[in-house]
Image (cartoon, rainbow, N blue to C red; front, side, top):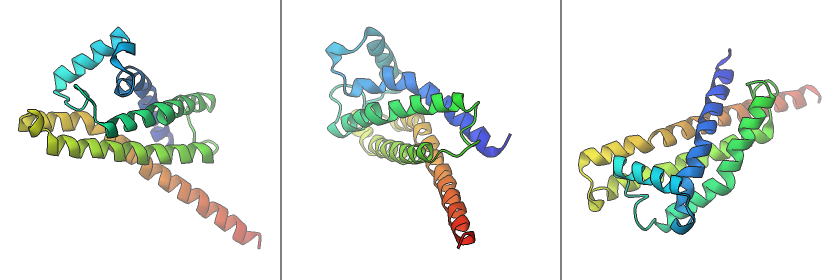
Length: 177
């Protein structure tokens, strides 16, 4: 198995796991409490109490609601699209490069890593103001860090893949001249 195929499988699992997280937790950023499922409220309450996550407790900041809306409108459909494409291509999206899928991964990686980076900085700088000890701030940063790191890796990976495709196309066009 090539490193790209390994990464494709890893991304598949990441997106597959992220679908219920988006539906059950992240969507609560934009769904009013009276319309949330009891399961959502229970999971969210458990997460907030376990991790002292002040970002999701109480009144959610407008910028975070916007990030949540982007996740629901763009990222969730993309997770589903990627998983379906991955399964149709027999567990690899690299067999035949799919420029649309590559661009979607690039955009997702950029958007998700950037929005999580904003959350990480916010937790770091605003955690103590919200009653968190240094240890609780570090814990919450570690909770959010994978959702920064994995999309950042996706962004870098698909930047390289797209660059390679463009270079191959450029070389083909040079040969045909």
